[in-house]
Amino acid sequence: MLIVMRTDATAKEIERVVEVISELGFRGHPLPGAQRTAIGVTGNQGAVEATRFENLPGVAEVIRVSKPYKLITLDLKPEKTIVKVGDAQIGSDELAIIAGPCAIESHEQAFAVAAAVRQSGAKFFRGGAFKPRTSPYSFQGLGEAALEILAEVRAAYGLKIVTEALDEAGVDLVERYGDMIQIGARNMQNFSLLRRAGRSSLPVLLKRGLSATLEEWLLAAEYIMSEGNYNVVLCERGVRTFVQHTRNTLDLAAVPAVQRISHLPVIVDPSHGTGKNHLVGPLARAAVAVGADGLMIEVHNRPEIALSDSAQSLTLEQYDVLIDEVRLIHNVVAPVPAI
Ligand code: PEP
Ligand code: MN
Image (cartoon, rainbow, N blue to C red; front, top):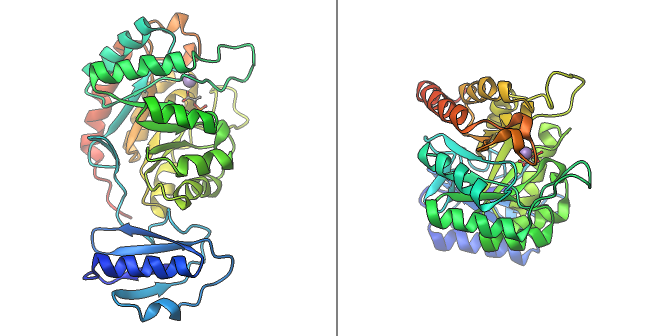
């Protein structure tokens, strides 16, 4: 159920509706929009009697929701959500760039890459402390030591830190050192992790699962939002298909497809999406052309000796050229008109 408040509804009236929702044993999620606030109701198993709300002061309309989504949907909030990460934003008119190495390997490596990322004008620095590797014998990340390096990067360059939490304890650590919690493809349906991230005050970057449908991905975002964290950014990073020429198949159609359903920002990761250095640039450019709100790019000061994802990492020089290109494209296509 979706309760649409009148445009002139007061904060008190909105509060009262949320209270009544709680008294009935459900949870109300007020999402203010440009025109009006709508309140999503979750926690109900069956239908809730609309008449309970229709006559409350400030209520314009009560809408039954027949779709599986309650909170990610444009029905609740017709305007795009801008996720604020400190003074940086994702989903605004500015193309968001999240760049950095696959994994933090050393202080020297992190700082060499961060200097270039900062220089490019990007606002976000990525780098894994805990790496979800296919083999238990591969480099697993430096753990908390990497988070300490990331915190130093943040202090030195003012970049916002985006880093992955593999489990609930990892969220505690990212909260201590970082600015945005990344939930990786392999964890997209780790429901206890999603709920924990939903109780965090940090924004969440939710990557699409290796074989997730659009609906499964959006419902994973619902898990986070249903716990009260509405700052979710979706990240398309390719899905597993039969093809051999790329690591994953980057599904760029997912960007406009998500935008037709959801107010959440959606960014693209052409690094994991292709797995190959020479494909990252072309797919990054295409991602911006289809209307992505940002890019996640892996870049390394010495890709040839990177401890993970060496083949897809851009050199600092390649990265620099690419950022100029995607900004030019973004200036041409943004803002994407609503269809
Ligand atoms: C990553 O961004 O470092 C990563 C492991 O990505 P994904 O979860 O998309 O594989
Ligand atoms: Mn990687």
